[in-house]
Image (tube, rainbow, N blue to C red; front, side, top):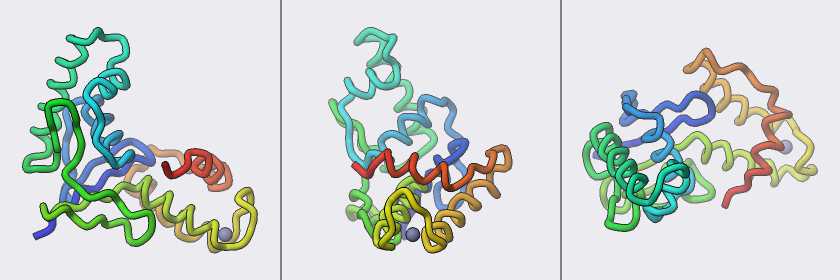
Length: 176
Ligand SMILES: [Zn+2]
């Protein structure tokens, strides 16, 4: 059986495993998981410490990362996290740049879905519409509105944002 991890990050972060919401105890643990998932690769412990605890020295930072990994492991039982001596990542294949957004697993039966990745895939499809990137056509808006509507329905506190503001922002982020 394939297990699915879903991260909703376009709004207050929400994590689901097999459609069941997961509670992660600290905001840093959510941030760590989001960063690894969105970048789609493993990261050195030192750079994660610099990112999440820039105010800490080396020893304190490494200890904070260990505690945060412990929190994440508790929230995500199984083999989702790929924690090595120097690197931290997820046990998944990279998400393909096109397609349904469901990455094939690396034999572990685990797939990752991130709304940011889905949004970017829709955006890259807009580039095939034949208009300048600064313009928005109806074919651009439909799938993106769907995604944003889903986020807003599930999370009422998120204020609606005009898509015309949204699109250039995400286009500027790039896919790297
Ligand atoms: Zn378009």
